[in-house]
Length: 184
Image 1: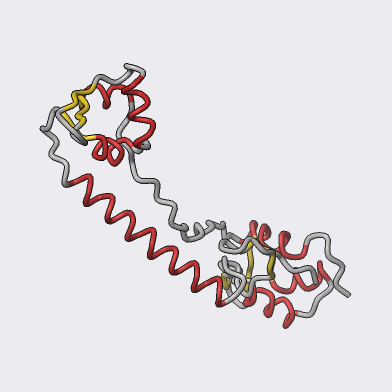
Image 2: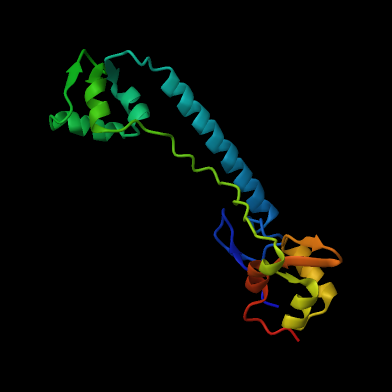
């Protein structure tokens, strides 16, 4: 039987998942992924706090506030000021102020890129009789025993539906699982 290989989200290594929803190759990568997720959430929370601390009615903002609001590096903002593309007022050392309206016209406000891993989207299947194989049909078509089919359905978390005394599984998932493999 050919296993469905996936790529680990953390280390990018190929692995044979124990479940269809698995995204990590090992416990070590799972823990590392969790730590990265928590760090991203903290970073996002800090970002939202810093954006909320900037009053909306302020006409002139500092360079550091502009980097937070518009997602642009400080060096880029200073370069644009030197080139005359962004008008700025120098009120003293480290007191450069930029017209907020002009920045909003030039750059859309930055929405924090949520790079936190997303849960795999649940697949929607039609579990109607015509879109499914019965366990017996799967066993006959792929020359397997019914117990092996049940084992694979549980192992790869394939949804099933019971109609009367027959259990049905989506044709799409079964074809993906067994397609191209010779089971004897």
